[in-house]
Image (cartoon, rainbow, N blue to C red; front, side, top):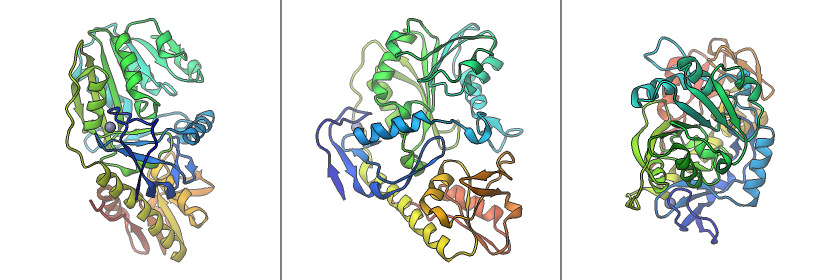
Length: 387
Ligand SMILES: [Zn+2]
């Protein structure tokens, strides 16, 4: 069932007022982007014109966001360090920003003393990587709070942390990066328009966001307002007055990367065909099925565990609640600790006669299942998304 919204909300991507709410989303438990369980009650809509999925910005959502950011603890489980990316070919796990800087070094030709602003710099982990790689870059950060200042000023080439509104920044940059920040913004188009002033004609904007076409778990993250696909990211950038220099989904798993440069004049981008509502409904149904199936499994299992302690594992544990006995994780920094009051166990140490649900996208979950399943320990992967 869907509901046409009352006026006042317009699509974050294309500006259309034809947003439709997907009511089945309201019953889904949620999670915050810093991995805390959050109750059901969110509102998800799909734009009938461009197909983009997005949260409905109403008073309830604004109040939730304010509450989340008051207590925000990015990467709290590993003391402020980035989660490593385990990519098949590399020599070992690397921080995500190391892979991003590798990519930017290949895609852009920046001068040696480039001025670089990380918009939404969080704890400063990307700036730290940039600083190590490019000691002559002059680095700036922008964030809503100044908690990271103490860490940032230790970087030898760090210049300034802005906690003001964008329009109060009077500086020019060769590169502005938004690494997992655009999806949080209440008006991403306005921010991108404002950033055009800061990069001038020659600067570049780099955006990294989750890919909701690959991972429906993005929808249940309360403080993610806009849920991007490669098409909608490109479309938003073009609506904000940029030309797409690069857009792709191969840099990091389940994520999208986009580089834009400002264009002086532009045509409104043509509407692209989209699956829109049907696609998003299929993904929300798939999330609801995981909640149902894992609750059922937890009730009938002697020993019920959840694979992973990040976003999706925390989300599902919040949904199943007291019937979760343990978590399974392969990250050595998490093994042996507690998460949500339950032990975090290495795969080898899971007790016999256990069931472990793997809340990951079907292909990845199936791979985990076939890699870890052993005598007496049953891993359960979600079914394919029925589109
Ligand atoms: Zn739209």
